[in-house]
Length: 171
Length: 62
Image (cartoon, rainbow over all chains, first blue to last red; front, side):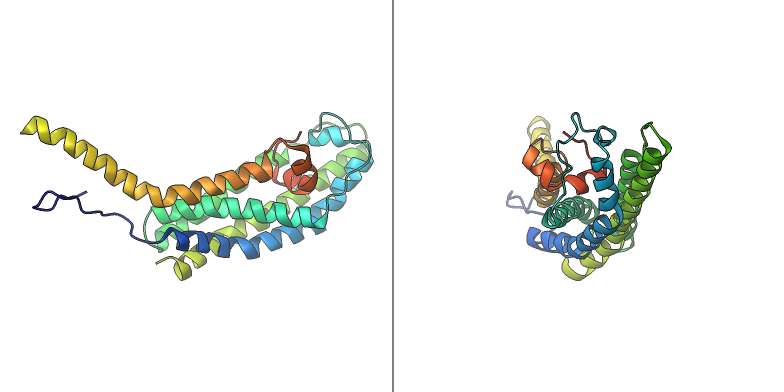
């Protein structure tokens, strides 16, 4: 921080309202979160319900099987997908904006960050545990494919939406 | 003079870094808090409400 001749400190650095950063992150997250929710409802939820109904919930990491197969409410899927999308968007938007004003570098950073997130999510969701019976294995494989598709929607959507929102809303 | 200015420059550098990082810290921490709440908060009610999203995103379960 430079000193003036009188000895006072003048502030430097990014002079922009934090509010615009929040606005850009939320604007990017809203449409992608809705698409993510639709992808989960249409692709993954039927397989998850089948797995729970077949008492294979231990394959999902549950310590104890549910007494009754849970059916996640639609509002839960909507709120959860919006929360995850907004959280990711806030983190990636902050990282991108910290590198400088919106431009080619922030676009590439957003794409790289979303790629890393997709790799982590794919690794986490991709491991199929050994299950008894070909039908259970097939069901689990279908669930993993559905999860990969939904996560692709999430990451690709954010990679496109974050640079656009930053250019429009962040000075 | 040198001994006096060095620590001051260090403090100035620190405050510069703080001034640059501070605007991004709040959105970053808010985002991480949201991710933790949606994906890893160890509350059964939260898990049951967000069950499908948690499993699709590969977050840990109960």
